[in-house]
Image (tube, rainbow, N blue to C red; front, side, top):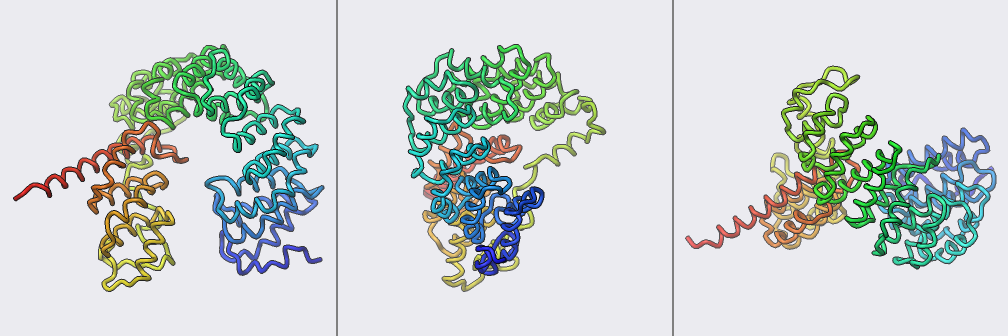
Length: 502
């Protein structure tokens, strides 16, 4: 039997590992009546067609079939397929091609809003909301009929994608509904700039302590990110005041999330962190040590408390080590940690302790970019480089190839490209790539004086420049902030020296 996906010439479409000739077998496995085979097919989809968040031409071609399978009765894991379609529209895990392809088939997904399976309905809300504004009315219509609280919370967040300021009356009424609807309503009110009362924040905090099997820590992180400084402090205070240790663990998670996002947060909330580091419950102390890690260098204000728990907490020990606190070298190894390396050994092994580089890339341009560097030339262009080579370098720089962008910018500068033309993509690299420090270095190397105001603004703004999944990104942000200031001062100094008459 020939399935409709067999008519696609998959050999002409790349996936994660080259021509996606395995795509028909993956789709056939997803459609299998055997749940184990179907699960293996869904796993293979992520390995081959949506590998680690990357998308490919074959991904776009597979989307219509994925949508059909998600709506086919009897297919296993339909909620996971709908989740996949939603991810293919989400920032960071999609492309213009995948977003357009999901939008084109999204009408087929609307019946899933009324599916008897709760997981399918919740996944459909996410997929339809992310696929574009065309489904706003259908989502609002489902809100009027839906009774399951977790889906009502998802619907609130989905409707807010297309209504930047949802009706305050609707949100205020939602604050009185069962968990977790009030969490979504509180977050949306805060996002809309509506000040929450102390009672509403306390109520939201109480909701966070409800024990639900599908509950997860991201809910308090979402809420703490949306509140203003006073609201964030009130939420943490309300959690700390609750008798259950689990609520205080959540308070520590809220602190960690706030520290991760805002540079000013550690100073404003350090007294709460100190209190949690002295909590009688070891789980609370460990969660607080994690929050101290997310405070970066500002954790020095809690060093005394961290030293007191360093015997029991590897995290606290790690923070002291990063701070250069001498008590890190004297603290015994935490129980079960085994032989502890010396301080110099641990310092050398910390993420980010050495120079930034792309693993295996050696600083070289991405293969196939249409540009080569002269061996031993320190990144200089091959003599007589032509227009095609320069065009290839521009493509590397403009398309955000972070592992090669700084080298491409250096090569373009040596080829005579004006500094002013290189400043915008390099500034974008500082905020959007995993190698921001190197982009700052290049701006300093090429004498980009016009970038000084932007560099200073990045150094002084409250929101952290580096936002990534790296476990040490707050510490990297602290280092980057110093680097931004140093580069700005160096550029200003060199400009002043060049303007001084002999």
